[in-house]
Length: 203
Image (tube, helix red, strand yellow):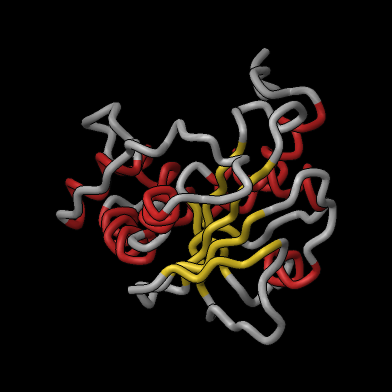
């Protein structure tokens, strides 16, 4: 397992495969106020590829090419936030996507614990640390602890998707889940456009 750190964009020619796990670190939870700092990715091979985003950066051509590539499935946990953060920063609409949090809420209806740490513990027996979750991701120099934390958020999503898909099929909810995944980029755009907490489907 290795962490590969890049500045501003993925390197030319890097192919992470047909399914890429992605997560973001920001200065806070408001994409209009809190800048995107770090994007971490994995192709499912136990290696993490981490981009440090510069303050004020608005372009990342290699990254956005992958985000918008229809032949690459982008795999998230709570993709709604990450998709919005990257769209706000770079103007790219990420698709197609899969969200393990949505999948969990559709098949693990026996619990309200749908955090990544809980999912990994229950479904694949992995325990990850959340100690660096609230650290300063805008720092010019990231610590090894920050890099390891960032990596842990993407290294296991491929295995998690496999386990969740098995349950979605078992419970007859795969088609419904896929429809939710297809809508997710628009849900993120609604957040950016001013409907973050409004249920547009309510009366």
